[in-house]
Structure formats: C-alpha cells, structure tokens
View 1 (cartoon, helix red, strand yellow):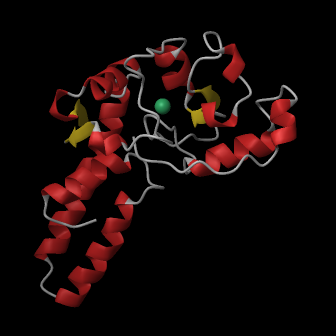
View 2: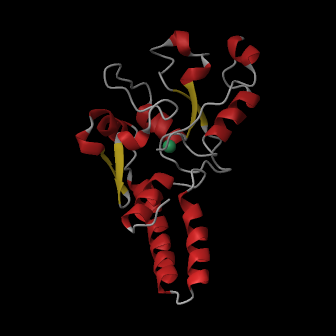
Length: 194
Ligand SMILES: [Zn+2]
C-alpha cells in the first residue's frame, strides 16, 4: 500500500444524485491509484473492471454512500472477499488517501508486516488479505526479476552503463508500478536510494 492523493470529484452532480459508479468519477479514482488496487497494489487488468470501494462500508454508513472522500478504487478480491462489510471504528483499516501506509506497514521480502507491531497495520494486512498466497507469489516473482537485474548492474565494469541501467531499474519502484512498496524496500535493502 502506498500514499495516494485524492483528486477533485469530476462529476459531483452524478454523485449527489445517487450514482456512485459514474464513469467520470470512476476514471478519476482509477487514475489516482495508477490503475492499481488502493490496498494490495495489484494492477487491475482488462479481465477485472475493479470496484468502486466504500472505505467505510455503505451497509454500516449509509450516509457516506455518495460521499467522494469515502470512495476509492480496489480489486474485487480485497473488496469483496476480504474487506466486505468489515470496518472497525476504533482500529480502522488504513486509508491510503489519508494515512501514510509506510508509517504502519513494513515490507520484508515479499511479505508485509505491521511496523513495530502497529495494530492498524496488523489489522489492515490481515483484514484485507495483503499477504494472500497469490500476491506473495507475484511479489516474489518481481523480486527475483529485480534481484537478477541488480546483480547485472553491479557486475557491470562500465560505470556509465551501470549508472544508466541502475536509473532504469529504479523506475520499477515508482508509484505507478505494481507492488511498489515491496520493490522500494528491496532497493533500500541494497542501499540503492529511491
Ligand atoms: Zn486488492
């Protein structure tokens, strides 16, 4: 999970008129997450349209069903299989539009852990299924790929080529890339500043 910036609502009339699925609004939310799930950072592909996510579930907070600050964009697995109608007012799931996730969650290899045992981090990882096996597998594949590329960079004897390759590689930690939290942590563990 990474910090996101909420854009202004492109079509507030549709929202206040009772349409939270308005395409203009959905597109803006999708762009704000870089086409990724706001929680697990999986790229939402053509086979999954992605869900308009109610951060506070509309079943428990009906007054927030058409409130822009309560909407996000998530994958169907995080939204329907894990989060569903769960929401703890005292220990709420991290909201990447408000909270800085790296203050609550730390990536070690392909796994996420609550930072210093933080309860909100812990609840978010478990309640949203952020360490589910299929995601661990995808993160690990990416880590293995990056590891090979890092080795190749550092074994290069030409320093200009090395710098160029390293610069290219660091793009993989950008916010628009899948699982960027894990990849950022990988680079930092190699003393590569990102
Ligand atoms: Zn997800």
